[in-house]
Length: 366
Ligand SMILES: [Zn+2]
Image (cartoon, rainbow, N blue to C red):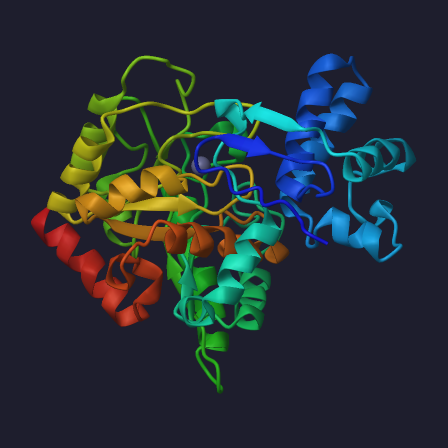
């Protein structure tokens, strides 16, 4: 059986008779169906459209094996019936994918790319964005560390939200130093044995549109590494180059997290003169992130190609809020591979010692 590829470099997705459709196409069809319906069905369709990005197998293949699509989360009998109809009789052409859903990889696509490039996959040594119970994550530092060891990582960076993001339970300077003690204790436990893990202490600064953070510089200077991201005024349509340039000049910042602020089928994210933004980042040796969370995938492959041309460093962060979500690193690894980011530009391919020495250098020249 030929499964039509959902790789949509031009934003087009085509399907023909006698072929069947992939999960990317099903995601798009579910989202379009949602636009034609009313709640509560609309919500179910939207949720399923988003969930399809994370299905671990091609739905068409599951059907071919006479299994039920209800194995997948967010799929009940009604949605199964709709999807089976599409698989059985694919629409002839989807036309352009709306920008709000464009350039997202599905898990099956990401895994296919990594299966073709096993060496690339083996290069990743750590994950540089995740949240714990200290802010809006569900697990403690130890649980995240445990999950990272199972994935084969040799370091992780804990990036709970800083105090400015109240809605996500952001932490203040006093809590940050309390957290440092917890991280130290978990490090004592995990730095032994055959597969030691190092837990780096970081934060997700809340950057305002002027590029300023929300924590004292003295507290940030005690951290191993500082990630910062925009969480406000994310629906602006005008060019936002100035806020990016200001954020990159912020002396505390090492990594600019989820740069565009886009969310699958929910928010487009910001626009900027990207060659200029990435050019300044490269000049100042700051990194820009691939937030690997499936409905973020921010930066995406098209912007990563611009980043590659600028020579800027790239950081992979899953933005995990639960231990199992550390697996999202597959999305970022696949995107970096598709964009042909050179190996030496990816922070997560460094050892923890190399990473920390880069972080120190950035501070010195800030
Ligand atoms: Zn964030």
